Image (cartoon, rainbow, N blue to C red; front, side):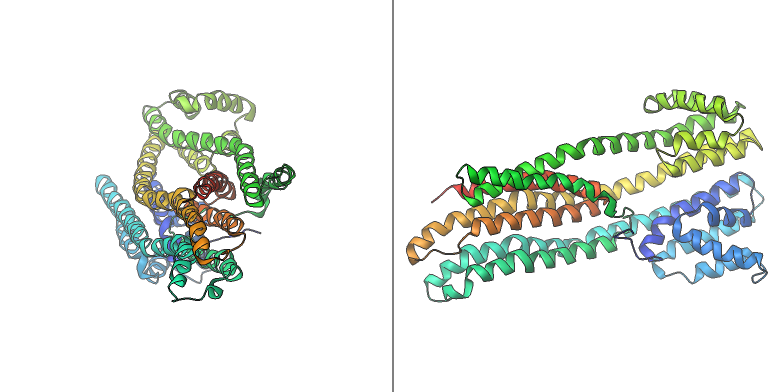
Length: 469
């Protein structure tokens, strides 16, 4: 069972796949394939939502329910939501490109189609980025200002007779701070995640094993209480230790994923060199090995691929998958497609590799621009959870001492414990939200961010609340 899957067929999810669809059709056209071949290729190996849509069209054509695949595709595309208008325009250009005899004109038309869907993707990303302002302000107000007002401002106003102290007792504060506010913030985070057109990762229950180190909070807390420390301080130390241990345990997985991502990007760059070598007539095996050797991050892969080519005894596709599937199944698909094209014509395969490299480069550039725009929002939310919120709440506790002396009552018993638990909840919610914003919503990424933010937040809060006016 997978949690957090984006709603099937949503315009956001489909828009995210449109550059890949147009790219696959461009590759098929450059290798001499027909429109029908392109549709069948997407139905077989395309991105999830469009693969399903094109598979239905192919099945209807094979069953003679639909006499013309091109007509069926264009009718299906015309019925897509208005959010996919850029894809509709691009598909009309693609359809015309397949009917054009001039090679240079076909290339220009496919280039225009790719630019249209990339611009549509960029526009959707900018729209999503601008829609984050209001939810972030709501989280800021609820997550920081409301607890501060309840803990420090309302007691001060009660001194003037505007409020009764009984209206803001510890139980009320606990329910609002520990239940109501996290619930609202959580709903906002889930809503933003569902609207993110670039979010692909899914939360897997199997990855919850990475939460096990958090159990170290229990022995750390018990040791601190045995040493005679106050409950709130013992709890703070326990959370700091638990977060630090969790981050230490998860760090190897993070580094491994960074290494895999770096090699995946390098494999995309290698396509340029591979395309050049194939274009001059070099055979696929030698061209692949030398192209991998030319890239520092792929140097080890060149030896692995050479060994697999020897062991596979002619089954080149199996050799490629044995080496590349562990790094990126998608890149393994691309290299296999180039190999199949090379069995027909080496120079066509070279042009296919170069064209594919340019497509991936253009897509990465657009996604990187959008990610940079989202990064400012993510940094603001991370800073709010790790630094600003604990400072404000720590100062609120610091002000309770003088207010209690003036009112002659002890306000909000165990407020330090309540706010410590609240900061842990806030760190978890902000970690989930910020990971989703950066399209890194895997369980391991969320837990890593949480185990890094939470100890910092608790330390800042403990230090600030330790001072007294």
